[in-house]
Amino acid sequence: PNEVESWTAARAARAAPLLSDLVQIRDKARGSELNFYGKELSQCLAAAVATFGPDQLLKVADLQLLQHPLSDPVYEQKSHSWLLLVLRDGCRRTSLAFFSTYLMPLASALRAKATELEMTSPLQARKYQTLLCHVWAILPGFCEEALDLGGALLADGGRLAKQLVSVLLGEPQLREYVWLAFTKACDTTREPPSPLSTALRPANENCLRTLCTRVLPEMLTAYTKMHAESVGQDASIVDHNRQIALTAVQSYVRIADAGLVGNLFKTLVARLLKATTADAGSVDTTEKANAVPLADLANAMVPHLAAEH
Image 1 (cartoon, rainbow, N blue to C red):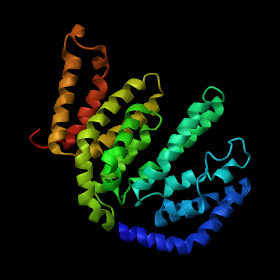
Image 2: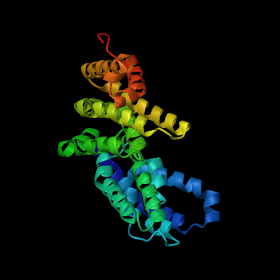
Image 3: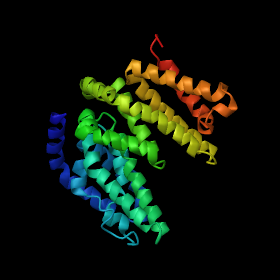
Image 4: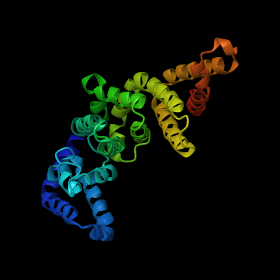
């Protein structure tokens, strides 16, 4: 990984003038021009992100989402907010720690700004919430063949992992991006798509198994909370969110400690039986409502249980 970062930094320095020209073209382009070549320009910049890393492009065009008023007619150009979609499409095989050190503080500042404006300017608050979601939407790419998965997730006592779990449990509008991030991390570790991720596989497996005792139970809790919160929501959205969450759980189960998975499965089945077979008066109402998500989770885990379970 260190060699990869050194190589890309050296090549990015040579490509910096070209990247600067591309950014200027995007900033100066009119709507009609973007209709003509905007897609190709974004793909070119996303390819630069994939090749050199997001940090190198952001040296050329920094995100300034809070330095300019949303009412500015050229806010998109001054703030480089258009870069959020480029980063989402281009990030892969890069440093997850960069998301933690650069983008998470930005996300926190956007959340604070949105909260500050909720009472005085609800429309602007929603716009900052949208920007916040766009920042978090970049996370899954950082987890696709991350160069430093263990170093980033386990640093400072597992601070980043705890933050991701906190989002799963308490921030419904951002959950999808964390589910997808864990899916990417687990799938590219279990089935490495490149020689680089093959070399990183032992370290990444060790990281994910180290965290599984803390993360996997909380993923199950987050799924049951998500089910409770889905009452009254559009059925297609609920099903979409359900599939993304269950896919993430299955991806982690495939790589987690078999003993832990077996114990979690037994707990799920015990809770499910209690919720569906006990006398009505002896079962907590909340536990009854959890019967469906408990069944979903148990069914998702069955194909991946060890033979002894």
